Image 1 (cartoon, helix red, strand yellow):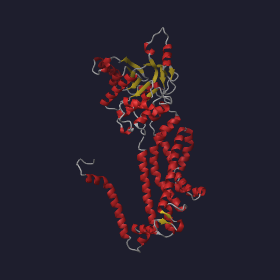
Image 2 (image 1 turned 135 degrees about the vertical axis):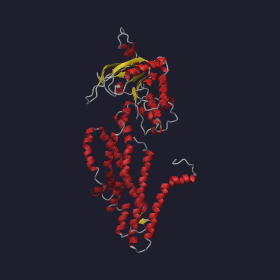
Image 3 (image 1 turned 90 degrees about the vertical axis):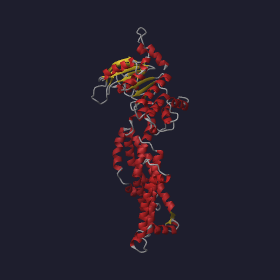
Image 4 (image 1 turned 30 degrees about the horizontal axis):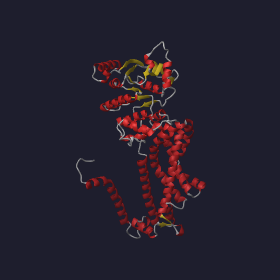
Amino acid sequence: MSSAIPKTPFAGWLERSKPILVGLISVASVVTFWELAGAYGDSPLTIILPPPSRFLASVADSGFRIGLGSQAATVYQSIFSTFVRVFAGMGIAFFAAIITGTLLSLSRPASWIFSPLLHLLAPIAPIAWIPTAIILFGLTNVTAIFIVFMGVYFILTLATLAEIQRIPEEFLTVAGNLGANRWQQWVWVVIPAVMPGVFTLLRTNFIAAWMAVLVAEMVGLRDGLGAIIMMGRNLFNNELIMFGMLVIGISGYVVDRVLMLIGRRLLWWRV
Amino acid sequence: MNVSEEMDILSQPPSAPNLLSKHSIFRATNLTVKFARDDRASPIDGLNLSINKSEITCILGASGCGKTTLLKTLGGFILGEPQGGVLFNNRYLNGPIADILMIFQENNLYPWLTVRANVRFGLKFKKNLKDKDQRVKHFLDVVGLTEAASLFPHQLSGGMKQRVAIARALVSDPSVVLLDEPFSALDVSLRRRMQDLMLQLWRDTSKTMVMVTHNIEEAIRVGHRVIVLGDVPARVLIDTSTADATYDDRYSANFLELQKHIETIIY
């Protein structure tokens, strides 16, 4: 596609995977440099920033179980806990925001009443809700889901209101002409029309929700990826901290890709 | 429809035969349309017009002469005066109805629905229509989109999109189809094919169609009647029948003469 010269299959494959290959080489170089610099057992760098060969071996020694005695949980359980919290919070916030946003748009007075509140609540960082949430719901999953929800709900509601403004006039005119009442127009036209735009914003705000859950897991909840870091801190275990950071990095990347795939597969249209 | 037809005939005094209104489906007497919250001159002020049933009427005019406003008033999307403005089957329109469907220049289709689902969309709101799937299938076939039924609008060309819009309008069997410059975004050859399709659909269904266009050739070729609007507020400058077969040939003397006549009046 990029050039007119016919290529062998291998050359074509090479051309397509160039960005991935270069990316892998870049990561490999950093890891190699890190391993080389941390190869000496008692240098400060090795102690504070143990390289992957060390922290992976250390965590593998305990069978990827983290914690003390009977309270120990596998890393898979930690990943699962964090994923459930993030996806539950974002999923609830997404549908709640679309429903409230579209309902607000049906009534001008209602949007006048609630818009200032939304604008005031949207900039509050989800982390700021942690103390209140812990008082309200204790150290439970509800707390974590609530924090994620508060972190994205207001901004997504505002996004829904903005998306509704962008719906082409004809969409509603055509539906009304074909006999749809206001309620049917809302279900069959407004909701599907705003979904892709709001979902894009959900993806952009995912990082904020992700961080909020990690912080909640660090300051209160006893499990999840954030708790791994805190446990490492409490045990002066730098290997565990490094391992936690690696898992958080990879998990966050995976979630972002999953969101992108959902967006592409299910909500590919752009109004 | 039979009832309103009867009413139409009954409402005419027998002593005053009026051929035009006898077959008319729309009638506007002293129609006035004002823009809400706007000080601009009324686009339509005191217009008299009737549209015949089972004919293709083409409305021509320079930009801003009020032809789209007129079309929207015929569809009940804009209400005029007196009493909503336009008589449809002898009743004043007080809003859009499913018996008069409008096709727009663009954005007719829902991007999240397949071609088939777009065509079927309007049938959701029609409880008492039978064999919905069969109807959808038939009209997809009529507009030649059976093969494309599972595609999404972004995978279609401009002409295909408008064919879907036409199929969606016809599938719910309205009395009138209003078209607002439906082919203006298409290139010349595609435009001709769409005009042929429209004529063929008219031969099959005998629907009343009203098309607004700024293309003189298209109006003469497709229309059985051509109305030229001009000035602000709009008034009828030309109102002529082009049902005669000589108007189907773009190079006939009649065709060229009318085209020239309209050009001198519009420009």
